[in-house]
Image 1 (cartoon, one colour):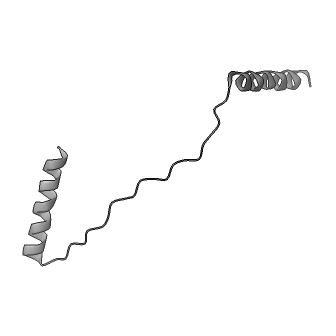
Image 2 (tube, helix red, strand yellow):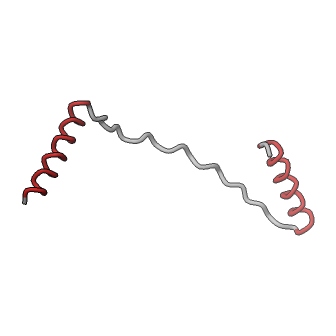
Image 3 (cartoon, one colour):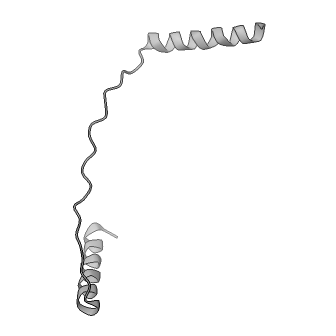
Length: 65
């Protein structure tokens, strides 16, 4: 289904509900767009190499002890 078809279907259901059952339909505002996420620093190749070397060093100390 496309958006237009869904809108038509909802409008028809809304009209039937109002006319046949005498109901009230409340329309709510859509959700607002989320705020921008805080800036995050991307790791540089040096940062990634340091983390890898640190992980390897930790593995080496675990095997010795």
